[in-house]
Amino acid sequence: MLVLGGPGSHESHEEEGHPERPERVSAVLAGIGDLDLGSEVVRVAPREATRAELTRVHDGSYLDELGAFCYAGGGDIDEDTYATFDSWSVARHTAGAGLAVIDELSRAGDGVGFVLTRPPGHHALAGRAMGFCLLNNAAVAAAHLVARGERVAIVDFDVHHGNGTQSIFWNEPRVLYVSSHQMPLFPGSGTPGEVGGPDALGATLNLPLPAGATGDVIQRAYEELAAPSLEAFGATWVLVSAGYDAHRSDPLADLKLTSGDFAGLSRFIASHAGPGRLAFFLEGGYNLQALRASAAATLGTVLGANVALEERSSGGPGAETIERARRARDRALEEAHELGGRA
Amino acid sequence: MTTVAVGFDYSEDSRAAADWAAAYARERDCALVLVHAMGILEQASFEDARASLAAAGADLAARSGLADARVHAHVDYGDACSVMLRCIEAPISASLLVVGTRGHHAHAGLLLGSTSLELAEHALVPVVIVPGQR
Image 1: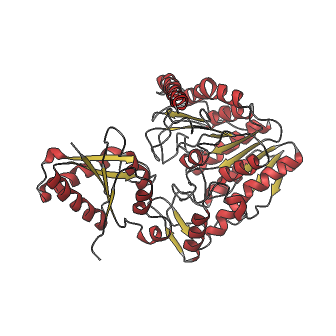
Image 2: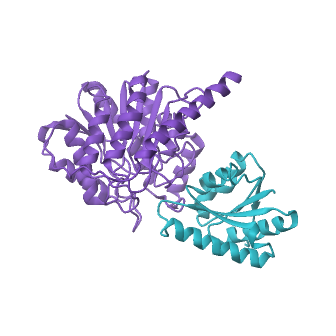
Image 3: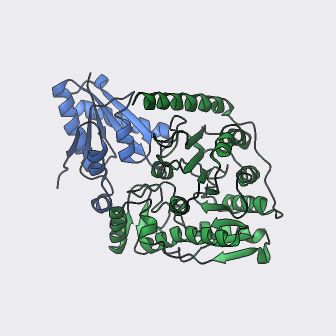
């Protein structure tokens, strides 16, 4: 069963010529249509996230400022990020769509969630919009689960590091954040040496990959580095920041994944989640055909539906970065433990 | 040698900040690093952005009378605030950060936490905010 959150009314959050555009949602919907899931799709209407739900991860003053900025007509927040008059409402419904999906999965105790709304969220910090993101949708959902006593793993395979999510849960031991991303690339963070704050050492895991890296390398990074962390953490829920801009056709980055690689990654992630305890959140992905095929690959794989896949990619650079990342992470953890011991 | 890092996004305010920082660096015998933050949508390649910034640095050196060897260009991915904060760390190890009052997105910055105010809040070194011409 697919629990589909959204899309709701997101179209008025749009800026001419911007790659984060309403057609992205249509592309994913088309990909879901390709799976021919029929009655296996349960649609959940987005609801507005409340202020109390948002302030678990965002500063109240930021929410006030963002709302005021939108109601003043919006505009460009920075070089990458825009808001319109309607964006405040759209963003709250986007965050709320994730909460609605979580609640429906909890009730059903079965199925897989997909939060198909926009704008994306993983760059949004507690107190600032950035990187196309206004509110951190996956973080709001994770905090909602933590408040219920759950342990949450957030796996982020967007091509950009989810600096906002990492920052929000930096010192939160009940949330494990795992990110694979191209590096160097925006936002510049996400080194293996970033391992979490003093109360959550090891609860942040970064897997940076060089431009040109292919699916074999990213799959190995997950199996060799992420699997032990996921197994040791023992998540009761797994949320996925599902950005599809690591696809080889994406215009904003230079990784070389195919829809077949996203299928492999999704299978790996799903193997660490219990029934009804897995939800994907749409982040990036700006080539509409690639987005359609890759989202279908994710959902077709985890739901066991027939899906046409591109051949998995291999032969790109980056194999050596896995061992380098392991050493850098071990060194950072050792240093942090030594510092903690001295304090 | 003390290093001064100045944020530069080619806006008028950032040019004013760069001029102020260059004058300060000349008087105090400091190195000056011109810093540009690359967003997701920056059109230029990283190498092109670095070349453009190096050219802006050479112009600044010529205009301010600061020796070329004292002026460096640094391009990094990220938002302006994070990139400036990273300049405090090695290898740049800046001991002073300089920014203009407003960059290209001034109207949003007034409401949504401007780079200059956020830097002032988080930087562990002094921050100078230089007003542009009004």
